[in-house]
Each structure stands twice: as C-alpha cells, then as structure tokens.
Length: 357
Image 1 (cartoon, helix red, strand yellow):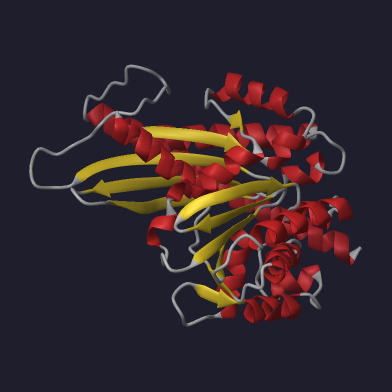
Image 2 (cartoon, one colour):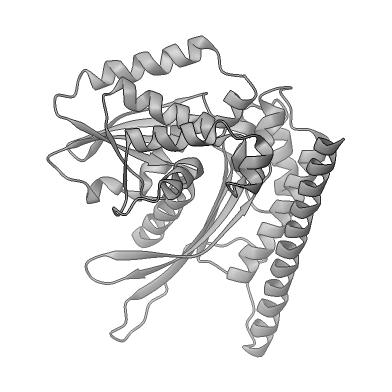
C-alpha cells in the first residue's frame, strides 16, 4: 500500500505541475492576443507559418526566430530560439525549453500501440504547444516524432488525428533522418581538425551513432536500443550485437584517436551529477562512477534523495550503459557533452532553410 500511496503522490505532483504549465501557456496566449490588438496586428493565416526574412536596415544584426517540437519515447520537448546574425556568424539563443514527461515508448515497445489514455494526453499537449507557437510567433517551426511513434502500429493514425485537430503538421521521421537532424547543428565546425569523433545520441527508443572524420560526418546509423526499451526489456542480444559489430567495424577504419560526443537528457544529467569543473568534457570512469553510485538506490530514493525526476530516475542507468558500451567498443576515454540534441538540430536546419530564401 505504501508503494501505491507514493506513486499516487507522485502522480498528483505531476498533475499539479502540468496544470501550472498549461495555465502559464494560456496566460502567454492571452497576452499575445492583447499585444496584437494594441499593435493592430493581423495574421494572413491562422497557423501556416512560412520562412520570411526579418532584417534591420541599420547597424544591428539580423534577427530571426525558430521553434522545434520533438515527440520522443520518454518525453516531449518544445524549444524556442532566437538567432542573431552578423556578417560573420549566427548566434543561437535558447529562450525557452519546455519538457513534458509523456512516456509513449512504454506503450509502443511493449504492446505495440499507443494507448487511448496516452493518445489523449499527447493530443492535449500538442494543442498546448500549438498555443505556444501562436504566442511565440516564430518565423518558422517544425514538429517531429521519433522512435515511439515510428514503432507503434497506430502511430501514423494518431499523427493524422493530431494534425487534423491541432494543425501542427507533425511528421514521423526515420532513424536515419533523426541521425541527420541531430548532426544539423554542425558541431563539426567547432571540433579539433587533428582528432576524429564519435557522436552518440541516446534516446528512450533508439540510439544514433555517427563517426566524424576530418570534421565531416563519414557514416551514421540508428539502432533500436534506448533507455525505455532497456527498462522494459525490449532489446534483444541480436540488437546489441548489430550495434557492437557496426561500431567496431567503423572504428577499425579510423587510424587516429577518437573522442566521443554525447547528447541526450540522460548524459546531460550524468554530466551535471559528476560536478565536473572542466567546461564540457567527462571521462569514461566518471560516467561509470555516477552510474555505479545511482544503481543501489531504489526508485523512491533516486527521486527523493538524488532529486531525479520520476521519468529520469528509472532510465538513467540504462542510458549510461549504452554510452559506456559504445565507449568501451571504441577505446574512448573522454566524452564532450555539448548539451544539444534533436531539437537544436531542427532549429539549425530551419535557420539554414530560412537564410537560403
């Protein structure tokens, strides 16, 4: 009974948080309407937002804005960025990141369909995100769904329903497209040309691995191995073997030493828990130490004592296993943690599309 009471208490807290966030969204939407009325602003369309250049004729840099929505297996994210551009470069400023814990992968990877209950929650959250799009009024936006909706038999049916109800134009993307978008933030432009890199993005339902050779993405592949799949014991030994073989085979073709780059919410949290003074790098032994320290704790203690979010507490060690395994297979000792991922890649691609028009 005590466990049920604890779970009920956590659900009540989560419900309260969602209520506050929805109320905040409604406030932003109402405020946006009032501002538009004061400015006598009229849109030519309801939601069809097309890329358009916004520029200042004076000495100030060009200013644009983009918004991305990522429907993952463990959570949903909305990222709003402003982009400052001068004659030499563009600076991406993250103004708002909203994360909604909705574990679609639990349905998709175990029973093969998104449940009616989670489908309703998904539609409600997308509707709230639609209001945020109206409130932020970005120049361009893009909404993508990944592994959970790719896997679910009713994934496309649910997406069609969402688009009909909310007009958000959500699309399910392939694992290959996901890997490409993750790399669209052009992190290779900031890397040491004398070293090669291995980019590892671990999500709830899949892991995207890319080799960056001479500052160019050489090969990339998506594997159906993720933290939620591992939690639900939905990863087979053949899945592990396929990823290990692919990684080792491509590592053998690289003569220089390799440094890893890790993205995803779990490695960001592991990095924060390691309390590293260095700017953005973590060693293999530190990742392992954090994971080893977390594992003995019960789910309740991970939430109350380690202060992990409920939807992070039960998957973080599984994600850590994936990062550590790939680093072991490639004899990689250090990992850069840039704290960017799919939503950031979408933003960068939107900006490039906008800038090319």
